[in-house]
Length: 393
Picture 1 (cartoon, helix red, strand yellow):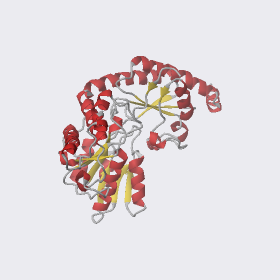
Picture 2 (picture 1 turned 30 degrees about the vertical axis):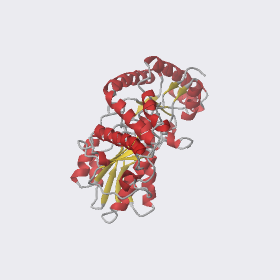
Picture 3 (picture 1 turned 180 degrees about the vertical axis):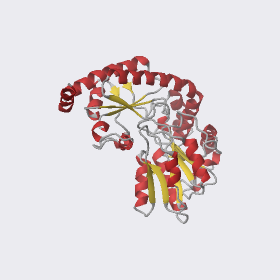
Picture 4 (picture 1 turned 120 degrees about the vertical axis):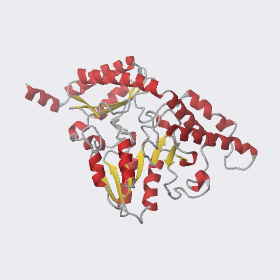
């Protein structure tokens, strides 16, 4: 295999060496349970408390509004199921979108089987929700609006401030799945009127298996995991001290270097996008051109299958995806691409490339060159492409 070019950072990111060094003592030296009462345990408790302060400070929250979880999927489940249970007497109507991560969509489908009603908002061709449709969807029995901050497949950043303002105006709680956004774009929960937020460390160069759930103090959800008194008796289970410390360190590094990194990443991304669109016929960029994550480039190539494209890229040492890693192995086209109006035959030819600050212009050029050759090769074997060219002639 040639040099590895990793362009699947939306699936997971590399752990930064500084993060690993911050975590290491809590595996080997300060391995105590932070909920124990002896002096040795206070070292771990102090580390957890400091991590909570760090995370809270980065989003403008109070420390007692941050709950440590196993990641974004758990945090999404807690927000949605927790609201359904806590506010069932007020109503059983939830609003979300058709392009959410499956941690949200499948949770909503689960609640529908329990008698809840869910409105799935449409999006436009760029993946953006329509604010007027959101406001029209709100009913007296609406208890929750759950809309992602930025889409994990096409990178579109939703109008979160406006969504939060609409939710606040109507007295409806607002949860946002910020798994792809936290650590990549600035987030201040009060300014954006966010009541609950989900994040996952491995999306911003932290460890896997750890995330956090922000819940505003005025939101009174019950315990999500029963057992012990951890996380203020709302999420039982022995604290993952190394993970918590690593997440806080990764979040701190991401915040310190965000503006500089985003400029660098976006420049490489734009170079890649321009080359692909200019040099590969019948290709299209998916997602909003301006309001998108700085590291995301999502394409569709007509007359080819995305899976074949991924296999041939892999043979050249290029790691990419056709969409969410959580739906890998599915034969169905991306629900996100269908929601933005693409027909099945085009949606099947999708490719998601997600960069990091380590991605160089030279690597982007290598990927563009490889893509040109691979797409040309696959189309040469496609009877659909052959018929299309004949008809064009």
